[in-house]
Amino acid sequence: MLEGKRILIGITGGIAAYKAAEVVSRLRKLRAEVHVIMTESAARFISPVTLQSLSGNPVHLDLYAEPRFGTVEHIALADLAEALIIAPATANCLAKIAVGLADDFLSTIVLATKAPLWVAPAMNHVMYHNPVTQENLVRLRERCVRIIGPAAGFQACGTEGDGRMSEPEVIVDEVVRYFTRPALLKGKNAIVTAGGTQEPIDPVRYLTNRSSGRMGYAIAEALQEAGAETILVSAPTALSAPPGVERVPVTTALEMYAAVMERFPDADIVIKAAAVADYRPATAADHKIKKDGTDSNLTLELVPNPDILAELGRKKKPGQVLVGFAAETEHLIQHATEKMRRKKVDMFVANDVTKPGAGFGSPTNIVSFLFPDGRRVDLPQLTKLEVARRLVLEIEAMLGLEVKE
Ligand code: CTP
Image (cartoon, rainbow, N blue to C red; front, side, top):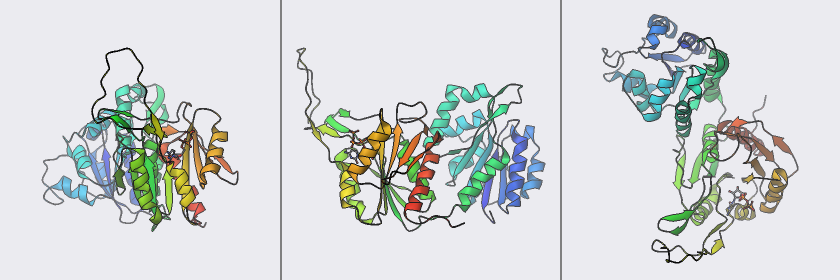
């Protein structure tokens, strides 16, 4: 299944390092070409000779060792990699990647490769739940690092909790899925909008909302994975565009409107995940608005922005798939269904942003898919990338592109 795929396995120093041997063995059975990179601490938990025998290739440990693989070995390896998986990834390793340190062979490879990166965290559950580790994981997710696990259960330190490395078969399944997923959307053009628009009041102030852009960025990643040429029309966010996705930066609703309308005639799929400001200040002051020295109120006059989704619904041609989002705080299904009918779209993704584990800034979401014929799919709490992949499956079905068994 992975015939000839060049996969790098990074192993860092944790008790789960012994399970990395099985990851390597499974990948080799699937006929991948596997190169192992170990940190010095990892070599205290498992012998490099084991990994060398299982992978059939020399193990890389020392940045300054005699090169066996091109003159600048870590760059040569980074270039040839089609996937890099770090399993186990310790808290220290996650922290190093999060800030971009490159002080050994593995961390240098992480910076030098353009290949997709998976990490399988493994550590004591208190270390895992430490806010700094959680912050590092958020930063990695924002940079499209794929995080596998961790699983919960008995820990080597004698306690129970989450922080165990996911089982080797789970890790290998993720990679197999990535390489074998049929690119059903190849040849299709997709536009995704993301983030919250900013509507200027004066040169230093603006009106905006709580959207982080994560859901839209995850959708762009899932569409790109499925083979679609994907454009991300993005309001300001702290996120980087997924590899292979073209980002068109915009700030205001009017700019987003122009960017989407210009590209709409060539689009097969449009997903409006952005939180577009419904109103903007009637005028943006040329200079910073000063206090007038009295205690009187300041009144801002707001004028409506164009409803981009509704306009797309009016212009939509047969064959174009249009998806809207509804972030609600009450009467979720009723409000979302009403919006879907009014805006004439093919599908709505509805989420109640007040639920824990859903909505703004959260790495997970709890959504329902609604369709004009009344069909409704309620999904459990999933990561935003998992929600995005489910959404892509629905779009493939709408386009008649389902995989035939
Ligand atoms: N949307 C849009 N242009 C706008 C406002 C919203 O394209 N000016 C899109 C959003 O990207 C989202 C959907 O419309 O896909 C729903 O947005 P929402 O603001 O929840 O709906 P509204 O119709 O504005 O309803 P309300 O603000 O009353 O909840």
